Length: 114
Ligand code: DGP
Image (cartoon, rainbow, N blue to C red; front, side):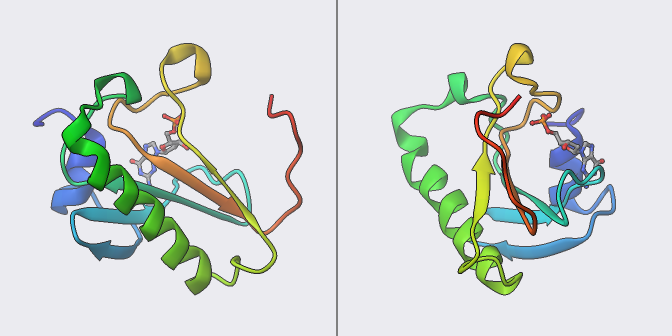
């Protein structure tokens, strides 16, 4: 999609610190980190929100989680724990309308989230 910031990161048009790029999934560091480690895993394919997922996206969504597992291990988070979050829609706090899995770690997490 031409006017999507995360499509532009995936294409290299906008710079980001990319830590993983494999099998249709790109993972990069969040510009505004909310934890010592804060990564975003996105599909290269533009999908705006969870509400736009179709059955044939199931494998791609699985790949987001497999990428999260891989980068969490790379970042030393696998054993101590980390949080994955995908916000859907404005009330949930989604600000970029290209689905992305937040991967947060390196500090204790509270529950419930705010
Ligand atoms: P959400 O609120 O769930 O839509 O999360 C969007 C996240 O995207 C937010 O944590 C900040 C991050 N973000 C927004 N613009 C950029 C950018 O240009 N580069 C990077 N690396 N992260 C961005």
